[in-house]
Length: 270
Length: 270
Image: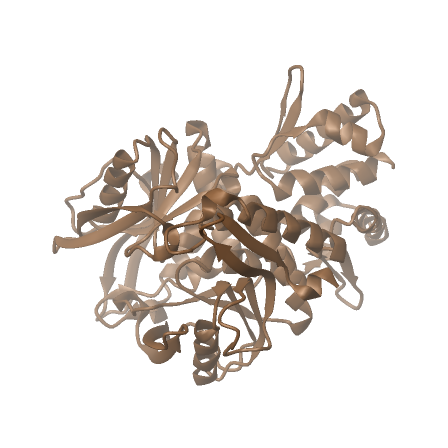
């Protein structure tokens, strides 16, 4: 097998499973080439990805020796994608009765979802999350793509428990500005104690749900190493959590003028 | 940029967005090479993927000329992956009070999910689905990975409607052997009329939910071009739908002997 063929096969394998560490020796054995030859192949892939801002290929030295692909985005790429997302959100047809904004089509697009997942993975990978946790329903696709980009399992907290989950831990929490009591529950089997969890949700107003999720993680004795939300609203101004990372600020929905005022979060614009 | 570099970049682009058709000319322009040179690059990638059973790279001839990656699995690969899944399901610790089987960890593993999505994509791609449709909650990850492998949007039908969806169509249906009346609802905006939809769910007993989903698609005037379920139970023997594709048959859960009897579906074993 010639170099060009090997590079096609290795690139495919790395990209399909981000963050997974592959043994360099396994690749060398598979193609029947020396490790030094394979290291040259990897150097070509690494340089190409670096030059074209296609993420990072990281080689891990040592006795075993490994290689993995990290779907990192540059600051410019994050800004560009989030701006595009904002433009889509401003389309007037999204305004619903009651001043809500229809976003279901955006958070179900495979391309947009993949990019949002890669943005969260880029921002939180240094914290080494072992699980991505969200609460049903709308946040699941965004959380799953984040989990995929980080190569960790997704855990979905339920609003109501189901018999197929076995014994569950159920918790009440206060949601939204109206401070209603809501319930969330999670199977005792879902999270081993001391797992490092990343909380991801699609939408945040006051932050009651995310706060509830964080409290639930405390009950599972799991440290929360990051909190990411796709869209945060400007209202209410009092938030129940503060150490979260939002991608988009939804400042105003003006039903009369059919206008959605939205912008990338400050950390993206800086 | 040399051939090996181009092949790394093209492979990454193709694999990251399955089924998306890229213009060959765009690649040629990007790398500043002749179309004929780029065609040779693509031939190398195509041959490599074919030789190693890594899916298929398809070039589309014509005035524009395009190329796309189809994450197809061979019959042997499908069998092997489904058998591995069956082995995991047989682990005795999965048996829950009431004879249920705990599967949440399996359907949240990024690797298993990706493969299940690729299996469904392989089986249903010939029907050219334009949307993957599922109902909340447990089916969402499997459906999303299928949608990703097919490069089409995911539509999630709700059990209860939410104000952020706008006007919805709500439908009652009979679920399960107990024939309870349940509700599903979907935003009027979610599906354009005449869209070809693929229904995906994680679990099927009598098939009431899948039957309800199919009926709901009728209300949206959308043809159902396929129905896929990850796990189908052997009970009840009377099913409400018949033209679906299951990957795994769960035949028996024996709580006393702590035994789960499970096997790949017949079409996979043939």
